Image 1 (cartoon, helix red, strand yellow):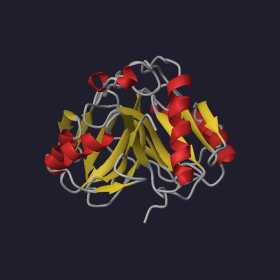
Image 2: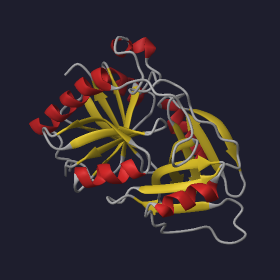
Image 3: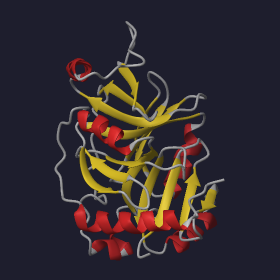
Image 4: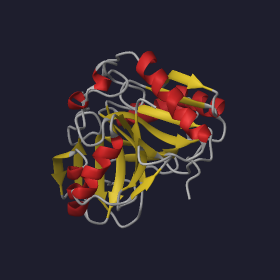
Length: 281
């Protein structure tokens, strides 16, 4: 059972929202150390069922193919999610690049060790590695001509617009805030992500050490806590309880309350976690 119903977790998200709203600046999309397109990558044994669920939570299918294996891309305009048909569970961060070999060479120069490299004859070249805290990261050649979403996130959203639900990029979930995961030591993790081209946008030590980082393409949340044990896609918005009830009425299941009905976890049936948190605490 999650322990984030505690007062500490309440304080953590109150701090987070204050810093996000006041401290983030607009950044432009560009080539980063990892690539030109960033997405969350997840496997699913049934792509049709996954697409049907993501459609209900504000995502639209924008690309699909059956080669080299069936895959689908969905987006809400701010966040890109790639799903590959596979019965083996996997979730992580993926970057697509037009210059894979050079990108890999530069990362190896700064000490990144790849746990898996492509084999000769692989139709798509993929390199896998993990953060110090076990987050899966993959680099892949951008043979599909994939493009980075340019929609609004918590990084570049006008603070005034945050108070207007009709201006949320994702009407069902809210505004994308971070792809977060727990870390053992915040400072160690920050230095690692800095090597990958990320910059600290916000950092606090209360109610526990945490930080928000970005490379201009993706928002990463590092949380030195045991309140959760998995990576999660985090969205913020007003009236979360109301939006969750509407999602339930539309057939979405898998919700768990965190500190009451205003802050919930949605676990998709293929295993990806979404945090849906209310602002205005």
